[in-house]
Length: 138
Figure (tube, rainbow, N blue to C red):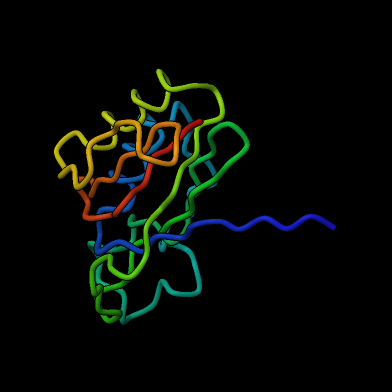
């Protein structure tokens, strides 16, 4: 039996914007958007301006996926630290560079995309939503 590990990101109210950004960067699409409205979490404790926030959604790109949601106001968002989203591009340096540059737009490059000592190409960045990424290819 095969195993699949996926990334699930929790945002402080801008999940839909972030996932749409990732879909554009990765040539993917946002799928399966579920809203808080009409869910079991849609109760007196959910602020009216939170009903259309994302309870769960998925970005699908080349057989891979990133999932995400907005954390309701009573769940504090501590930011993104202690992990890095890693994407390895199988179809060459040009596409990997394109993905790296797209993810870096409005963010901060922490290691430029270039050949590292171990071969291939590699770069690190923090995107405009604060999510850390590593992009690599052979």
